[in-house]
Image (cartoon, rainbow, N blue to C red; front, side, top):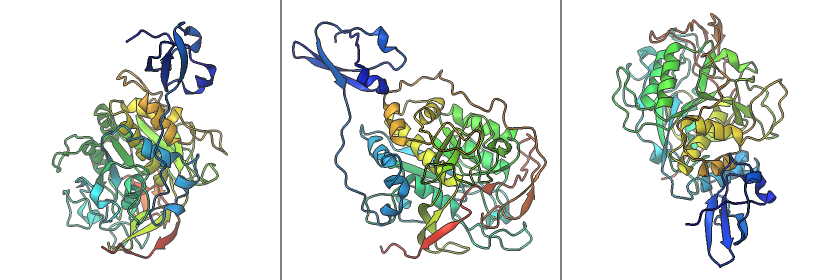
Length: 467
C-alpha cells in the first residue's frame, strides 16, 4: 500500500472523520480515513493523485415502516431530518453485534413488540411489601404493578399502574416492520429488564445492586448475569446527593465497559440537586419537545449532558389499571422517555464500533449534538443527533485513555435531608418519603426514587395483538 499524505479539499472540512477515495493518475485507487486530530494545513497532495473525494455510505431506499402507529412517532418523522430513522439503519450497516441494554425500572410486561428481544432479567426488589410477588429477589423481572393501594405500606400515590419499564423498553427496542404497533429507536437490541421500583419507589441499595448486576457484577441474593449490558438506563431519581454505594456501582459498570444513562428529572429545577443524575460518570439527559425547545418540566443546569425527545412519546404499555392485563400502547412525557432515546443512541454507537469505551460514547453523543432553544442559563450541550453520532462512531479509534470532561467532579452535591413528594400521576413512588441520602450506601436507605416520567398520559390505544 502506498504511503499517503493527503490534502483534502475544503469542501470536506465539515466531515474530518469521514472515509475518502483516493484516485491516482495511473488508474489505481484506494481508500483512507482522515485523521480528525490533524489540521488540513499539514497535508500536501502528491503529484500522482488525480482526485480525492468522500467515500459516502449509501443505503437502500427504505419506505416508511409499516408499523401501525409509525406516523404517530414524531421523533422519527419530524426530528432532524429523520435522524433516528437513518441511524438505526446505518448502525448495523456493517453487520455489527446485538447490544444488550439494561432497563432498570419497574420491570417489564409481556408485549409482542418486546418479547423476542428480552434476554433474562431480574427482580432486585428486596422489600417484600413493595414487590407484590411474594418478596425477595428472584429471576422474574415481571412488572406486578406500581399502583398505590392505601394499605399503609407507604402513602398512596396513583391508583393506577404506569407500566413505566415497559414503556422505556419499547422506546429503545420495539420491533419494526411487523405491521403492528410502533418502531423502537434502535434495532438489534437485547433487552435486560431489572425490576427495582414498586408501589413505594425503590431502595438505593436495590437500584445500585441492579446497576452492578446488569454490568456483570455479583450482588447478594442474585445469580450471575449471563448477559452483561453495554448500556444501562435509569429513568428514575429523587432529590438528594449521590450515595456512595450508588457511585461505587456506577464506577464498576463503567469499568466493565458500560455506559450508564440517567434521566435528570421533571421538576423544572437544577439537576445538580437530583440523584443519580448528580453521580459521576453517568450520561445525564434532559428533554426537548417537537419544536426542539426545552420541555417545560425538564430539569436543567450545567451538569446536564444531552437532551432528547421527551414529549408525546408513544410506546409499549399494558392495559391493566392496576395489575397486568393485555398489551397496549400509550403516550407519555418526561425525561424518562428522553433517556430511553439516549440509551438507544449509545447502543447504536456500540453496534457501529464495538471497541469504543464508555467515555468515548459519551463524547460522541455530546460532540455531535445540535443546538436547541434553552430558556435557562444552561440546559445541556445540545439535543442528540443519532445519525451524526453513529457516523462519527464508525470513524473513531478506540482509546482506553480518553477521558470525558464530566461536569460532576465530586459525586453529587452536599447531603440533603429533604422530604420528597411524588406527583399523584407519577405512579409508583407513592406519597411523601423522607430523603435521608447521606452518601452512605448498602443499608437500604429509602430515598423515594420517583419515576422521572410522564405526568401526562395522552391516550391509550385499546387493542391487543391478534396472534
